[in-house]
Length: 518
Ligand code: ADP
View 1 (tube, rainbow, N blue to C red):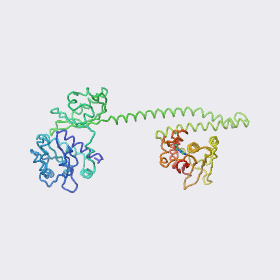
View 2: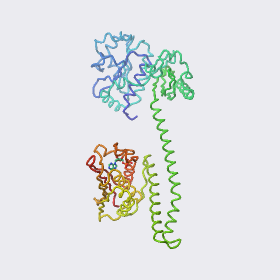
View 3: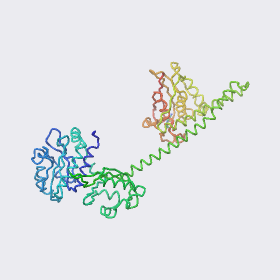
View 4: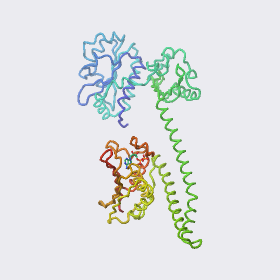
């Protein structure tokens, strides 16, 4: 078994269960320190016994501990005072056993690959060998989880971890003695259900009384398996005393005596309502998202369908297929052609938005295209907006770049998003420019403006979905904060990079992206 982060917690949970199962007033778990005869205490119940905790450790030099250490099995002392004194090798804990009304003390080895790697020291309220048997069965459970190397690592990690964290466990622990039918539940029960222990034990005889009807079968199956001696787990809703429901996760472990007879059931319960609620909400959101995506893609498809014949017939008319055209007719048809292409692009961007929104990559179909032609076309398409803002775009195209291997429609979208933003965030009579350069094996494109600028703290975030710098300016120009997320997705899909630079508020912004030349 692989060592996991929560292995120590697992051991501690088992120790805690041991305490509950055997009704122990005191137990501690000690793990062997590598290359020393000492065992360090990593967990103690109850935790308030500072007296023992401070400086306490077990040493195999001590004869009582030594015997257990050498593999002679668990040791049991009928006199708890003497037992503790012997085990811990200390005289100053006289009052402890008395205070805890202990009648005996025991020390149980945790044997991993024939070596004693840990010990459970406990005080018991009785001196029945059965108590020792129960503790032993827990020690075996612990041992079966690990190899020696893992155990040594645990010992090393143990002290570094906070014990109080484990102490403040949110879990509920319970033990049911199947022989005497006695039930013990940790105090967490009251917080979880609203019932005190005695209220719960007196009136809640069967799950019908506290489990939500729809989950009754699950609860009944759980109890059947648990009392049948199976290790089992279930999740069901419980009705609290105040009438509210809590989602309850419950795990049960059977405990058998040396003859294989089931003597106890011990387990852990957790309130998983928050987790359930979050999962449920996530599922609902996913369903909704999926519906929306499906809806969008159906709509986009439906909108695309009539556009294909419109474009086809326009091309046919333009090429004189239905007779010669006057110049005016040609001009009108050219406008129809341009605008239907724009419409197609818009529909595709809606599809892309849904894709990026749901974490899917936009598909990139690369072919040799002229970057300059794309830039000119985009600027051309925005002529009207430039005029409205009284801005003349400043274009500097590198003669070094001719064709690049890129997806034409998507590259168009990148440029129109960036130029669209530049127009949006630059006031009238400002400046907007576009510049290209060959940098190493990339074409680098800069879209710059003299507009409102972006504060440093926002620069890294603006490419996130739905991120908008909250300013009165952003609010007046509108948008949904998807444009740059799409830009990033497309550029990265091409194997390029995109980033933004700005001198700060009012100092303009520059967006730079690269596209591999080939
Ligand atoms: P939208 O424009 O729909 O809000 P974008 O993803 O395109 O979404 O942009 C995200 C945010 O980045 C914008 O809301 C704005 O705050 C900021 N931004 C983008 N481009 C510029 C720019 N040229 N100048 C200033 N801020 C910009």
